[in-house]
Length: 331
Image 1 (cartoon, one colour):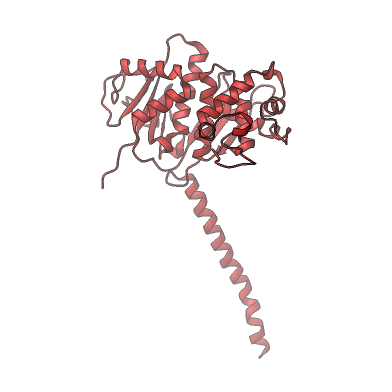
Image 2: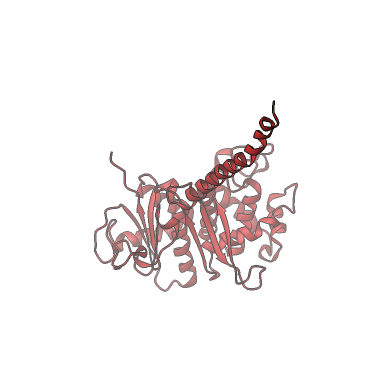
């Protein structure tokens, strides 16, 4: 073999490296585009401006999760609200579920542990069927938390450990920042916060199932709001009387309900977004803004969904949460 022949592979290496780099950049670009597009993978993000006095004061903090995790987080928060518990209780519950199950409803665990909080039937937490119900498991966690004197003043990991009796008592502390961000999306402390979900629009939803799930998660407040919403505006109609083609679930908040009622409204709106994929929810309107599945990167938009002209028949009146179902596609 000549010296020229021996040198050829060496000259090809830069070319091969360049081709490999181009392919790698193409793959990265594809996933970035898919992530940012409305037809890309579904994911949800909670964001909140850091509370005064915290390490993140004045900055926007975020927590990203799957639709499954967002749905479970929304249920945990809703059950806390239904029991009239403060934000601190919700934060403790969310941090506990983050540590125990990563906000997934697991059908397995250490020994006989199950569910979001890895509760054990053999330790008096309930039957396996009960524990696998997120509403039940969140409810019994809150009940036992509320029995702890002064739990709101305890360090989060101490309060969680008094309920869970874990072999890793300090493990809950690392989840407090993320749990605080999630709580802000449902809470009453006035922190600017939102919860959004991206990805393609879901398949058709059933308004009766949404009503039933709202009533299960939020309890009496949701049942009252659902009754008032039905009386105030028929499903499928806007407050101004303009027709919309989608089936609708309308909730009317109590007039003069103050911060607690505003909390419920925001929590119900974010709950609907978090559970949109599971329940076939296509649009949510509340407090002058709208979220539309498969559009605008999953972000909330100003009145009229961010479109010019206003007068969108999907707009919500003050004190109203409107949830619209996805329609069945025809082929």
